[in-house]
Length: 460
Image 1 (cartoon, one colour):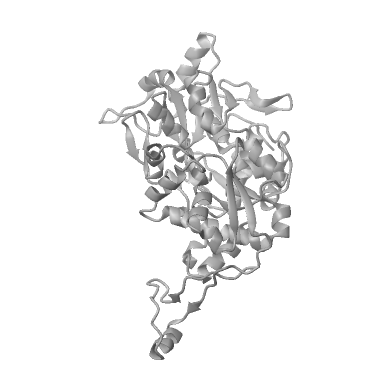
Image 2 (cartoon, helix red, strand yellow):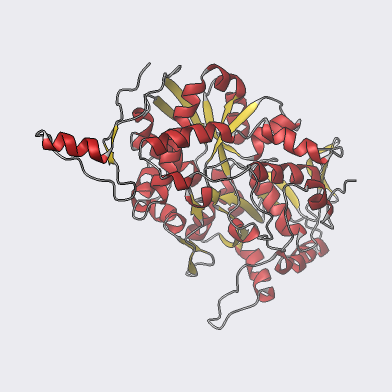
């Protein structure tokens, strides 16, 4: 099936000839010096009617924008997007074919391919965003942490706040016979690995997974449990947990309700870390290759639109709609428009809290996926030692930059993105120390990285 709209690129000499013959000269593109008409490369779409899932978080934004701004329709796709109740439901419905694809935790397709939890052949052709999470604690916990946090000349806490400030609070709870409980959204979520990383960097053991303890609480000084994102503030307010790691708007919601204080963001735990991904089954992509490319094209355009100056206010309005995130605009704007509020009244500039396109955010880097595999091994979700080559082989079956590149090259040909936005890469980012503890991560040495930590599994 051909798309409803077609695209042509006229070179300047041809445009000049047409103008000389009485046609109207088209407007020049100031960067490429090519004349672009608003049309789209034709793809034979195998399945135009699609249903995608998401969880009510601000990082589902590329899906909402691709639909509301007509980017899906430009590709000949007619897409429904449906909110899902929890991450397990998302995974099951994609695997079972009830959803054609979904906003998903980066760790979910990786775990499914690595043998942890429900196994399936899932594919990630598009990374939805960077950063976007925070760790929030109850007011009581914050009041006890705050004296341990250095203050700046303005009297405000110095960020980033490390879990060292939490350690004496945990010991205080333990002395009164109370287990220290915190929430995260799913066992293979970025949130689980980020809160574990943050705690362990301060020498606080977050617990190990074993065949007999699938909750990951063996030797734990902090008991981590699963809570769906929209339920985090209410669970904190009820005292069931004393803190949590979650995406927006559920950290800012705690601030607005006056029930908790965000103490750090994942930007400070791992600068410009990957967060959510868009996932389809391998079967769907094998049967519908052009559709997969067309979907990726629309999502890349949505990411670009989201990071263009001046568009975030409109994005907030769209996300506040009940069929998407459904939170108040003022709550969404607190993080989506380049700021983040910690203690009430302590609002700080954080222009990269939500990144949807910059820094090659949409490209599915192998190195991002391998980081999740190292954390699954570190905490026992992968129970046995694996050779270094296994990490690369496993992630190359799941992360598919080849699909992303096909989509991006078509967008370049259509004049919708510049060629410079396609990274020259082997799929690996350079080694980095942009972590809260300064530990070096080199995805080409996963065993060395796993062994560099004092808490967690060690491999030969």
